[in-house]
Amino acid sequence: EDKVVQSPLSLVVHEGDTVTLNCSYEVTNFRSLLWYKQEKKAPTFLFMLTSSGIEKKSGRLSSILDKKELFSILNITATQTGDSAVYLCAGEIQGAQKLVFGQGTRLTINP
Amino acid sequence: EAGVTQSPTHLIKTRGQQATLRCSPISGHTSVYWYQQALGLGLQFLLWYDEGEERNRGNFPPRFSGRQFPNYSSELNVNALELEDSALYLCASSVRVGEQYFGPGTRLTVT
Image (cartoon, rainbow over all chains, first blue to last red; front, side, top):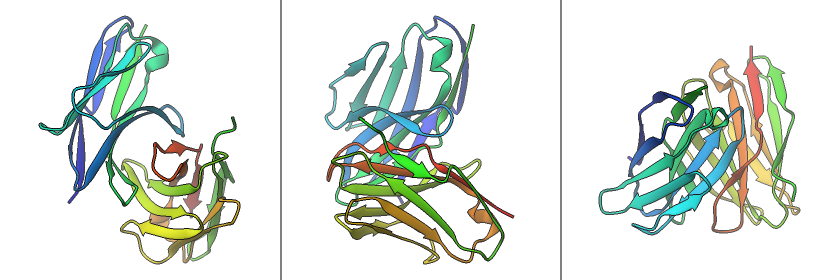
């Protein structure tokens, strides 16, 4: 059965800290790994990773995929209170266009 | 560029009734996806439509059905509503193969 597991499930840090969120996956016919940020309702797209070892960056956020060890990490540096959200990762199944989501990591940034 | 839109925002139904949820994709996107996010659970894949055809469905009973119109908008129908159908229903769209962008969701409450 396809499975995506995120850790930690919850994380509380102070503004300015750097955080690392983890995502491991077991997905048949894996095509890509996606990261989303969910604040209220709509998950907002962050990254899509298809190749191993190539870091993607967007401002203070970065992510990398390891297809040999079947995991990905999302780093956020110099965190701000606006980074508080649930971060979701999902494995995409090739051909089925289906995303298998993890449970999410609830990140809370305290001022 | 307008994002994915969904209507209604909230929907309250009683057990046994039918619910209809609507979604308009981003302009130029031909694929529409439906996900269910029940309280305490992760996003679960429901349906994928592309070019007017149902391409894939998740592990949901036949009470969950939908369609995609020629303008690529989509409708999700849930028949014979049960209490456990109460959830946030998210629609996403993409080009044929690409990252999925989510709408704000419809909160369905079954009483």
